[in-house]
Amino acid sequence: MGNNSWHDEIDFHCTFGAWPFKKSLDITPAGFLYCGELFPLKTITRLRWGVDQKRGGILPKVLYLATFGTATREFTIKTKQRDFYEHLTERFWRAAGRRLMAEMLDGLRKGGSFVFGGFTISDEGLTVRPKGIFKAGRAEFFEWAKLKWGIVNGNLVFTKADSPEQPIASASFLWVDNAHILSVALALLQERADKRRLSAIAD
Image 1 (spheres, rainbow, N blue to C red):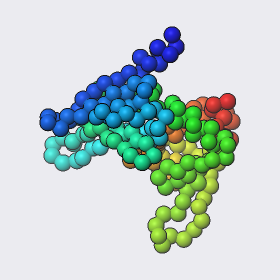
Image 2: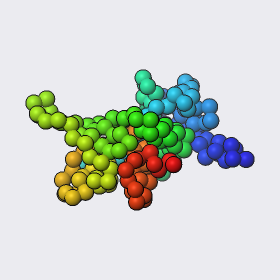
Image 3: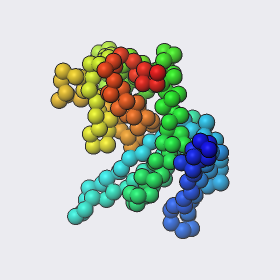
Image 4: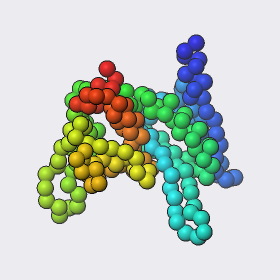
């Protein structure tokens, strides 16, 4: 019964694009079937989605993007329909996002690290790399307990807990792979009194 419930949660079919270039995507327990090519769920290594908003004219032009990918390839669905976008990204999360978060937490627990744009996370915190080819300085490490984070204009933004007005790192949900997965994990960490290890949210 539980298995059938999960199948129902992730089952999804859509067609998108203008004729004669219409494309299709099916999400099932077998994987992501994109235009007839099947990518098993275990091969999906990255997800990202967000809103691309362009200024100009009386009203801004809004485009919703949702991307999934393997280690070597990625595919993006673009739409102007918010309801469709929300339904699709919900299926992304249920079909692959939960597993990717579990794998990330397991990797952190084992001493691994993960790169998100200009910073790297470990189980104990975040390391910010110097920006610019001429910028001197060493990478700086911050413990989770000494950081604050939140969502600002489609980005996951970090600041020092004692200097919340000065961002030290950020990751765009639209352009940085798995930023949503990190955001969900950090939201769970935020609920804990002990913030020493990110992987502790899975204990």
